[in-house]
Each structure stands twice: as C-alpha cells, then as structure tokens.
Length: 336
Length: 293
Image 1 (cartoon, each protein chain N blue to C red):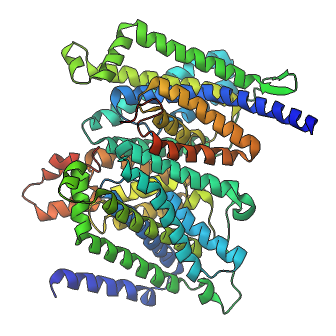
Image 2: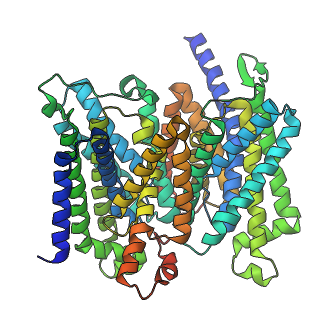
C-alpha cells in the first residue's frame, strides 16, 4: 500500500467518522449539499474534461429529480425503483440526442448549443406540464407514513443523508478513476486532439463518445434524484434548465476539470461562498454570490483555465517551473 | 361546424401574423449575434442579458427620470453599445487566441455577472414602462401597436445595419474581415479596431431590441433567459455568421412558437421549437441555407 492510497483511506475514514463526532445539523446540511453537488459536478467533468462541453446536464438532473418524484407521488413507486427509472430516462434521452450529434460530428460551439436546446426543452416541458409537476412553483414529494422512511428513501436524520451522499460521492470518484485508467480515457484524449486521426488509428469515435456521455448523464440524473430526496422540494429553476447547466460548468472549471477532486473543490468554494454571504448579509445577499461567481468564472478562464486544484497540483509537481501554468493557458477545454 | 372553422381560421391567421411580428425582433437579435460571430468568431452567451440591462435602462430613464420614450431610446442604444464594446475589450480581447469554447464560457460568466448585478442593483421585482399602446383591431383580429412598432423598428434597424455594412468603408472592412481574418491586417485594416466597432454595433442592436421588447414585456433580472436561448438556436439554425440564414430562421422559429402556442400552452410552442432545432441540426448541421456536404 503506497502513501497515496493510505492518504485516501485515512481521509475517507475521517469523513465517515465526522457525523458521529460533530453532530451540528447545519454543518451536516452544508456538507450534504456539497457532496451531492460535488457528485453532479464530477459527473459533468467526466465528459467535460474531454472537450465535450455540455449545457444539457441541467436537463438530465431535472429528469432524474422529476421522474423519481412524479413516480412516487402519482403511482406510489418507491424511489428505489424510481431513481433507476429516472436515470434510465435521462440515459435514453442522452443517447437520442448524442448519437446523431456524434454521428454527424457536431462539435464545439454547435454541440454546446444543441445541448443547450436540450436543457431548454426539459425546463419548458416541466413548466408546461404544470398539472402534474406544479410548474414553476415547484414540486414536493409526498411524506412517507412513519416507519416507511426507508422504502420512500426519506430520512429525517441528517447523518443518514450524509452517509448516503458520501457513498455516492465516493462512487463518483471511483468511476472517475476507473475511466482515468481505462482505454476510454486514451481514446477520448485522442479524439479531443483530432477526431480524424483518432478514427484513423482505429478508435471508434462515435461509440467512445457515446459511452462517456451515457455514464455522465446517468450520474447526473442520480445527483438530481438525490437532491430531490434530500431537499424534499424541487423547482424547474433549481434542478433543470440553462442556469443549472452553467452552474455545473462554472464550479467544475473553477475547481479544475482535469483532476478528480477538482469539481469537488469547485463545489466547496461555491457552496461555502454562498452560505457565508447568506449568513453575513442575510436577504441583502441575494444575487451577490452569483456576482462573485461570475467574476471568478471570467477571471479563471482568462488567467487559470486549469482551475484552482489543477494549478496547485501543477505547482507541486514542477515547483521549478512556476511559469508553466501560464504557458499552458491555452490548454483547450475543447478544440473545434 | 362552419362557424367553428371560421373562428378557427381567424385565430390561425392572427397567430401567423403575430408570429411574423415576433420574428422581426428575434431577427434583430439574431443579426447582432451573427454579426459578432461572423466577424470575431465568438458566441456571446450573455447577449440577451445585454438586452435585459438595456430594458432596465429604458425603465429608469422613462419611469424615474421621466424622459420621453423617444429621447430615452437613443441613450439606451448608446449605453448598450458601450457595454458591448467594454465586454469585448475586457473579456473577449484577452481570450482571442484561446479555444472558442473558453470564450463562450467566459461570456457565460458575464451572464452570471449581469444577472446578479441586476438582482443586486434593481431587485427582483417585475417592472414595466407603464406605457400601454392601443390595440389595433382588424376585422376580428387584434394586434398590439407595440408589436407592430417593434416589427417596423426592427426592420429599420436591420436595413440600417445592412446599409452600413455595404455603403461605408468601415462596413466593408467588417465584411472583409469576416471573410478572411488573416489577409485583412495586410490590407491596412486594424482588426482590433474593427472588432471593437463590431462589438459596439452588436451591443447597439441589443440596445434597440431592448427598447422594443420593453414595450411588450416586463423587465426582471432573469428576463434574458426567456429569449436568450431562442436567439442562439436561431443563429445556429441559420448557420452561425450567416445573416440571411439567421433572418429566415428567426421567422421560422417565431411561427413555430406562435402556432404551437395557439394549439396549446406557450411552453409547448417553445418545446416544439427546441425539438425542431435539434432535428434540424441533424439534417442540416451547418444551417438552413447550407448545402449538404
């Protein structure tokens, strides 16, 4: 067992032990939010790191959340079945949109805008079917009768939620690592460099891209369903649409798209910032957090496109060449 | 049955005409975005937010400073034009050599900035000019003067830009640089100046759209999200940078939204339009007017 693995295990054990030592409900609430959103941002980065910049992930998240909640409220289907169904729906939608995209080689700007249309559709469908989904007023899963909390995946105890979110977050990192070590990564890196060359070298471009998109969409839908089960309230604006998609892109880029913990760092920064502003300024803070995000996003893209964690790791790995980060500013998130 | 069909046709015709009127403003927005894309090769994701700021400008000039509408409009157009130039100078210019996606995401950051700036500075209340233009009754159909006026002004704006692009030296230089980025500097045209001018024109068109939209819609910090995405889709559908394609696509989209809204809720009109867009992307990825490769 090398030092790095030992570090991971100790860190993980500390995180598991945390709620049993420190039982402050507010802190746990913030941590659960950080974990769920980290998982969502990680899901986005799994495809974003290879230059597949999607603004459709708000749509996948919304589908995961709404399908789960609708099945539970209208048909009484337990989220244990509803969540996989929601994920499957998002996956199918991802394939329907992504396959022609990749088949006809829609990349760059065009891919971004097609996926933008996708999250627009999901948002509008949720709003339009307001008889079932509550429209823009939001939607609340029905409370389960007492004793059936496990069946309905509803827990009053924050510790339970913390452990669930932690497990899912770790699973996200494991998936990231598995992809990082697989042939998919090499194939995708080749594709993001040059699709024709990759195809000539025997990479099945469409299939590899579809695989990574499907994984990413399924994970994002799961994040949406978890968010719904935890918050017990969803509205089209908080789990779907373009704003949510941009929020994912933003957090992932600030943290760093190219390293496993980058999106997590992004989630910690954004959520802690929002909470600090909210506590110190109260309702006057409405809007300020997004203002700071926006400025940070622009500054990061101009000066630090690898994100905070990515740049820090670069510094540590090559301390002699501090200017390297600047030279690599043009590291493409995507090439056309 | 006969009378039912009669009423139905009137509504249909009304929806078709309203679609055309809506298309005028959309075409104006698409033109501004297309101009910027065609010349500078960047997509301003925050374009609709510039319009939102312009709408607030109109609101404050007219409601708070009590300027007449006709005096406020040029000021707002100028303001948003300056904003467009500033956006280019501060955000796009440092990223000109970066990958296009980074530029697109940076303007996404500007979208956050403008939205939250409006939230912080103006609050989240819905505001309007308090100008209610009369409704034109034509037979059994009703059209608001606001829409007719918007359509006319949008057309005038587009014609103005067309004349500027074809009749002036700067306009010619803009068209030339859109055709070949490398050669134009050799011909003695400073691309930086052209980019700045183009951004200002793009901003000015957003300002004009703001003056027109504020007659029809209430302004609030998130109003940009209600027509921003549509504008991008129109530009892509017409072929990014293709002015005529964007013009046609704007009317196609407006008709889909208007007719979709006639048969069901307005949201379904949007859903139809988005779905139509995705399908069209697969059939004609490079835009409506392109030939299939």
